[in-house]
Length: 165
Image (cartoon, rainbow, N blue to C red; front, side):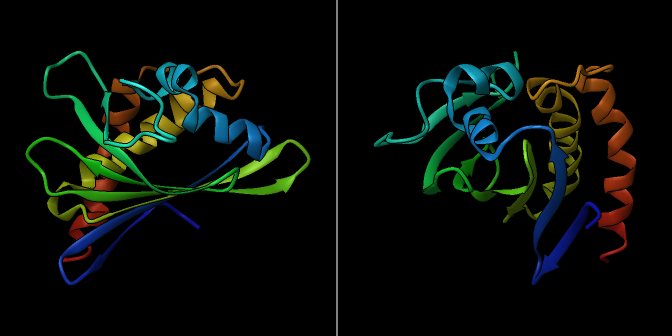
């Protein structure tokens, strides 16, 4: 399935799917181990799993580049649902599904819902993370920076969003 934006009554969801040369257990660790999460996504203030309160995930160097993340549902090693609160935006939900497809391979399915008008930035951002630093975390070197990947992805996400109106 191609990357897409879905709209349901003004609530937007972005959908992305990628295949990685990593087992579901390895993909699960990339999403839940604080050290591995730091290498590809951001710096969590602690472990997401088992946290009693939301965990601040610092996504960049700017003071406003963070999200408070809270686990809503975790089924190791195949499903992770996170409440995602980014400053200045209404809360959203990130669903991460990991599907085994062959020995040592997994399909990662991302659905981030409740985005409203910020769907284009989220779509390009997740695409840059999935195609760059997460791919590198699973063993394939990233040739380009997150900023370059984001800038290249953004126009396609803008076209997807424009086609909904």
